[in-house]
Image: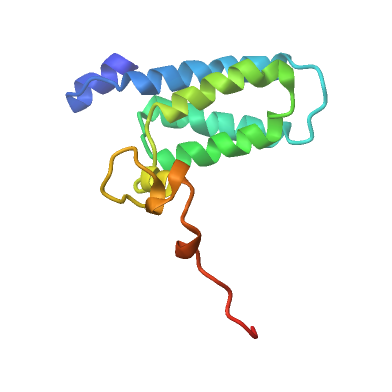
Length: 138
């Protein structure tokens, strides 16, 4: 099927999609073989099916991939036997990269010095003077 898709569109399939599909398959097999009753098993299986479909289609909608990952993790995340396979799915989703603006939000505002402190405070902590203060009497 991948060769057919490559011939139709003239592009090579994204190897990240193949990795995602393989990781999803491993987690689906692990979940199917897990004997315990999981209240959200159906939700996890539905989202794994969605992830598998996205991988087969070569979709790279990172926000949708992450949403599905979050739902699967919420459904099976506390089951330690499934943790390695879930970790593989997470790594495969993360290989597609972050959302636009995510790096800046995680690292704080850029102050012109690479790797330097945020807002001029030592150790990267925000300067207390830069933090908003609550209005008095509110």
